[in-house]
Length: 150
Image 1: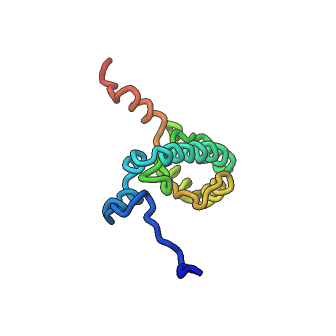
Image 2: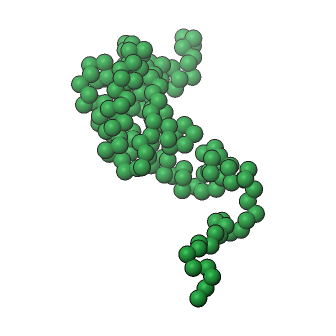
């Protein structure tokens, strides 16, 4: 009979025990660009999640029945750091009150996250942070903001 009965052998994961605590910390908790350099699979999955969240938000915001949010559109969803926090860029009409749109989105956030949780299959639903732009501001940025040339 072996004297290792009931014991588990502890093996180093990644091919050896040459990892320092600092290198392990940066590997697991590093910035997204560091993680992507180590494993490009993370970046692809984060972008896939952002695409799914954007599609779902487009549908859900249109169905909220809030007159303030009826004319807004989701321009972009990007990860902030990692996929646990997503920045949602919302474009409102030129005459919209940006502060009011921002407040309505903040109030709708729990319901939006619940809809996202139902649509995507992940262990944790990402947090959402909203950035509201008007379409006139967006056009100015695309044209370089130079309206002085007449």
